[in-house]
Length: 92
Image (cartoon, rainbow, N blue to C red; front, side):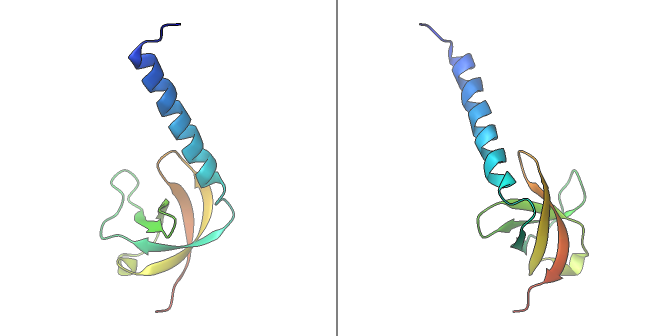
């Protein structure tokens, strides 16, 4: 059976997005530590950082949290990141 490259690429992208959402969904309801990056997310204006499992997390918080490790509660997922709620700054 012949399949075009475009169709195979789209199927592969769908599988990648689906598996990414499935993985990120496993964090819903959990608290995770996040290293906060220098700049806020352009689209949402929220602080942005990565967990120790390389999951991008967005959450509302003040600029003094930049370059610190914080604890967040994961509430929702999207293909690109998890939406979280700030809980506390992690003591160093």
